[in-house]
Image (tube, rainbow, N blue to C red; front, side, top):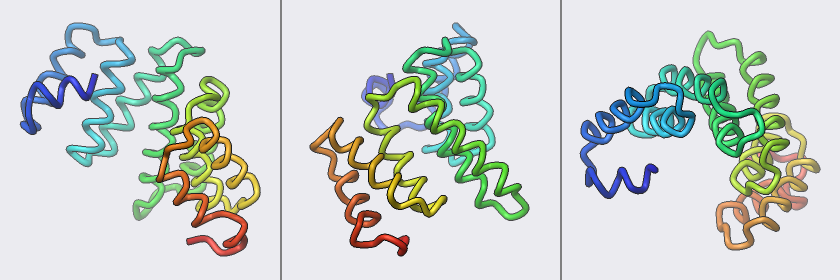
Length: 166
């Protein structure tokens, strides 16, 4: 959906946002439209609060056993971690929420290399759990062997760096 949109608007962020909002007006409970607008809002507008609200709506609307729900949960976990860094944030609660969302996403879509990779980095960098992090990153790499970012994460958090988080 986002790739088609990018082609259509050719870098015009306002036009992209307008099209995404229009799609949501037509189907306000469509989890794909909610997720697309949330991703755009986070990436292009850097509005984490609005993206968080949109991802929450997407999770509520998506069937609980659906890959779209897993994608929204994984993205929501990443947003939670970004919000945890804000001054005055309830960091522990945000991290706990992110961890629960990563786990739920992994149960829904265990073959999603992106979710597994993000969860692995979370385990290493946030939880300091190097052994499970490496296992999750290796699982992500097995799912998608050509992913350079996963290889880099393994190099950063793998056995050579155990105990030292980069």
